[in-house]
Length: 337
Image 1 (cartoon, rainbow, N blue to C red):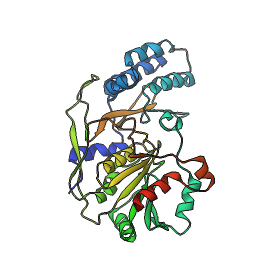
Image 2 (cartoon, rainbow, N blue to C red):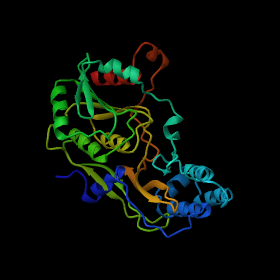
Image 3 (spheres, helix red, strand yellow):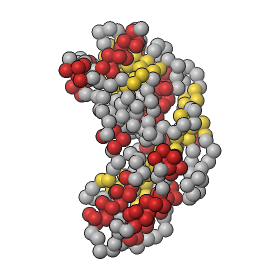
């Protein structure tokens, strides 16, 4: 049985396979490219109302603010700067403008916060004799707690990989899944892994789809349900470690796991990224990516700006100097109790 309704399965591929939108033609001039970009976002972006409520975003006011900076005598570099600044008003990590010379992005969703992750510390816990099952690295810590690191949902995992990991860690008292700094990838892998931690069909969230060009034109919310895997499933307590750089498909994974009673999120708030991205292009060939389908948690709340952990824990300077990861140590203590 597939784990989500077919409509969602098709849309989930858009995390790595973008869709295209046909637009009316505009002149290939700075003015034409500006008008085309503003209109693409105006008609297809999915978080206008949410972000107006969160921080007062007014897309019509944004038009006026940046229109005065456009003139047909400007060069490509100047145009790119203005269009990038305009897109930055959306405060969305899924919004990008791509040209041959540059890539516009909004990364303040993690750059403005403590990292709460250290490669140096993480290597101390994995050591050198850890095991590797495709995208998963894992070992048993000295207190008989299982530790699994998943760096990116771009790294493929199969059912056989997960079976081997669970079988190896089966005797452990509890399990840590570390997805800190995982900025997303293919949602199918988040689905596949999370399905090992539930024994029944579980409501994990909702999704909507744009039905028109208006800011309010959306379908009714459609349930996201996760079905239990028919393979090995974990039956003990789990801690999922998160930080601000957990984004997109990794944010969805945290959302799924948060819906299970035996799972606790430990660390910092995730970075968000709860809109399935689409792409379109400007008259000059630049590509624009943007959030087109909003997703919600099981309480119908948007996770675009992240998910709060059950236990908010930061890596302290003292622990760092001692070679300890405060977040891992907290999770180990929680699982031991």
